[in-house]
Figure 1 (cartoon, rainbow, N blue to C red):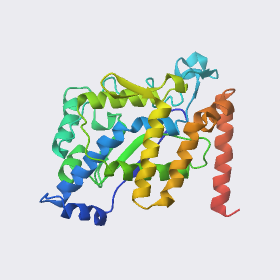
Figure 2: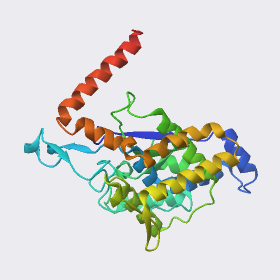
Figure 3: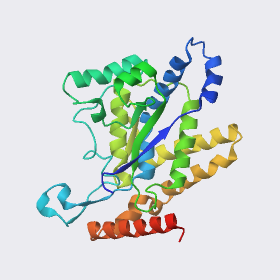
Figure 4: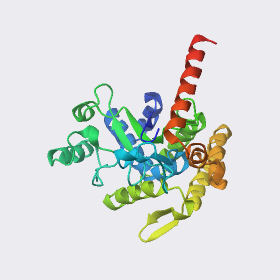
Length: 297
């Protein structure tokens, strides 16, 4: 559960997208669709720190993560999500991608492969990826266009039988609807570097250490930054007359207002001793529960 994560795939129906396409002035539907997902990918990456802060669930490590000889030694550092932290799944460089068009986006990834920075496109460890239908290759993406986006910032949550809480998936849905409603954002190289820095900061355990950059030489405490976004999402739901979406936001606000509600805090208490042993016990328990459900017991 330390380095395993949940990949959340999201797409709009073509019926919904065609309504926007009619007003877009873009000649080809797939080009409009590509632009929608490029814009959404940039926005979600910019706010990936929020997702990590609210869902981080890997605060404990086994010593073998650093040295094989330390197998079985519990390690607690200042991380709520080791996976999304500075020592987690990242490339040795911060990729700068082009969101101007699908062709320039693919070109920017291919350039890293050609330079030898990546052996293949699949080695691009990034919060959000654009995905085509069928074969997951850059050639297919360029030829057939974007079908959906993939969010890669969710830890595998040991507190949930399925590895992820239903409320967190509902929240991601609402967050995406909110972000797509915002004007297109500038996402140049500086903004992209800042987004990755913010995500790594949000993966820390101690909230007092987390400051979110929101411009040149400007940063605010993560709790304030998170509440700003959550309150804005509430207003969005009110304006859309969708009160049923509020519960997903309230669920996240509880984590911000009460630190004990954060998954990392709960998991640290449960697994801070005998991390591997207790993790295996929990895995066995969940396996039995799933098998019983499948048998209808």
